[in-house]
Amino acid sequence: MDIRFLGHACFELTEGDTRVLIDPFLTGNPKAAVGADEVDPTHIFLTHGHVDHWGDIEDIAKRTNAQCVAIVELAQELQGKGIENAVDPNLGGTVEFDGGWVRLVPAWHTSTTPGGTVNTPAGLVINLGGTTVYHLGDTALFSDLTLPGKRDQIDVALMCIGGHYTMDRHDAVTAAELVGAKQVIPCHYDTFPPIETDAEAFKSDVSASEVVVLQPGDTHSA
Image (spheres, rainbow, N blue to C red):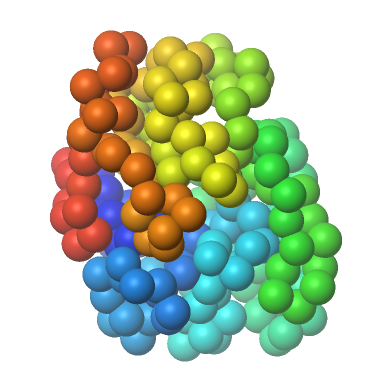
């Protein structure tokens, strides 16, 4: 499976003909590697509804008819905007799709959409082609980050490290220990001044996993 970092917390996971786009904040993202009209996902998954994660989901979903998976309140807002191909799990729910599945797990954060819908944030445990990726979403450090790895071996964790709005790189070192992934890819940093941090220092501090630092546009094979 190929993991392409598109900037901030946006990733594209590709296996065969399946292309999963996560948190498609591209327009207005100073670190975006591509424009919203340059992606062609078969699926779009959201961790939560803040504008820097909701991003371009409406335009991309309407253009591509990608299946959208998001916690129930977000899915209902999307359906209300004319996006019929939206699936509405809640925390703990699993949605199967061609080539894999995605399960929503807790993240400790807040969330309101640009349209005003209050919703509970989530992390995403995604299995695609036999590889399991855990996008932690926006989260503070909390002990339940250990739980997804008790059910599934996490191959790659996509982990926020920027601080201010999420856990910082120091708490993320502990989070890496809790998650127990084989590899960690840091995200949600350096996009804006409040979340500037040193990803290489984070890499040096982590001993529980291999840390792979990607620049926007880079692709990692897992």
